[in-house]
Length: 351
Image (cartoon, rainbow, N blue to C red):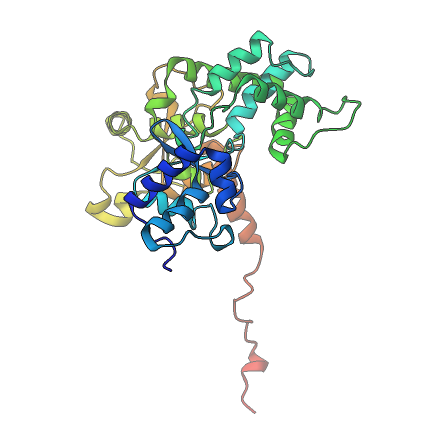
């Protein structure tokens, strides 16, 4: 028995048997339980992926796999079926992201930190808005993805963590608490953040901005993933960067980092001529859909750019320059641990 050695024909035969017998009989016949992780999608119907993959072995290899011989996850059933071209969908909705919780928290604050019901028009409106958010791909969304019941439940998870809540909190998560604390500490700023996300979703602006690799790196932004995507997309606008560089050169200035002074041409010669990165200095919660001005951009080297984006709150180039200078002054005051001890005349005498 070769696990996973199934064919498209074998899977289609298992699906046909599933349709003929019905779900309950099919699962009972082969000893499988309902899927808790992934579902197979075929011709607008969903099937228990683990059971289908296991039974497909019967048509391809003469015996169905027992439930304890495979997993339904990405290491077995889901991977085997996806390899054959089938669409695999999660049977559980994905966890809430910071962007989504920001919008739910903003709604909870507008309701004086009281829970909202599923039939509240504001909950229904937010549910529809969250379903347009380009963060979770379609294949991981269930039919109940961010429905009004789920949105109302999230407002409960948030409001019951408020310091003034008298009862026992629900089993929310740490991100709910983190976003709540951001709203309590910086209500005006976080309200602007929520409005920027809403405006971008309503205008369909975020759909045009591709995900960036920084989401898998150590960049961070309390404002959420969508605003940082837009921020980085503007920084990478080649035409805007070229105009900023041309403006600096026309003023007779060097293309040097505004934080540390690094000059690519001075270091790398002709290879570095005309090269430097741009940083969009306007805070994310203020940078709306308006046209980016050259004064919104700072010329900065790759190292300083990464240090700015590494951890929120992001320093301005001026603030980063001050940090660099303070660090250098501190190092100048501290004797190097690797410097050799001074040799005295007495110590230099050979006995």
